[in-house]
Length: 78
Image 1: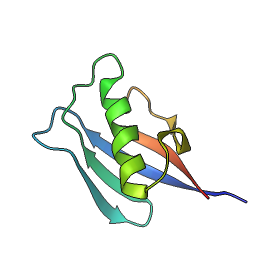
Image 2: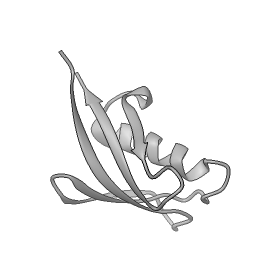
Image 3: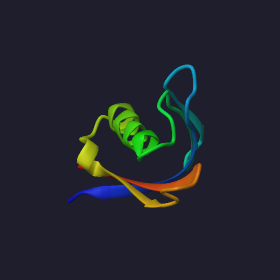
Image 4: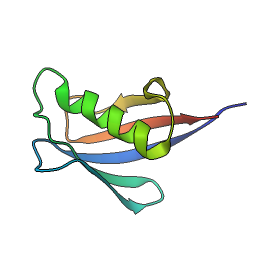
């Protein structure tokens, strides 16, 4: 059975580097190099979180805040 976790994520688009910072168990800050245009920052966020949690990109879902810097993200883990 797969389990999931929900995270509050603050995204910083157009940063100089890509980085995931864990603030506490359910709060993260993520820096992405892509701009917040045409969903590029969200795609980079999903790719970076998938790599960080070692899951497929399809296991990362933005639950709310798709057009905001503050997002709720669900990570499905097997």
